[in-house]
Length: 176
Image 1 (spheres, one colour):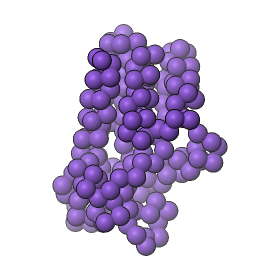
Image 2 (cartoon, helix red, strand yellow):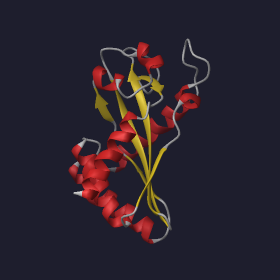
Image 3 (cartoon, one colour):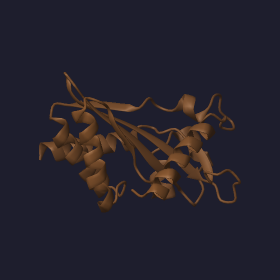
Image 4 (cartoon, one colour):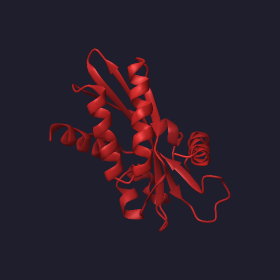
């Protein structure tokens, strides 16, 4: 990922966090407060295999580009080898309205537009005595055409479907 793209992704995540603290009209609380906790899963396989499988899954889903796989894998392995938590954010993934409606809670689908939206995944990997822990936390944005905020839309919580789909694909890849 190039420097400008990293800055762009970092800005999106920072702004998403800021806008997630804003109230959702017609609801009590904020998107952040209503969001699910990050999705945590522990795999018995060593980190090197989990990282390889995870980058493959994200590549298949369009959440990573081919040129990002080697640098991402290298950075994650380096962090894990230092007994630290490896983490990265995927580029923004555009999704259509129908797909997006399956990724968010029913109480926020009323805000969907024909423009759909996008998501960024925050992924963390760490080795522990129990195995390799993978944490996935999506930032989902509904596109609102003509909006003046820098995100171009509203941050909404995940209903857990996206995270479950990725973990299921990861389990299948590790088993196969």
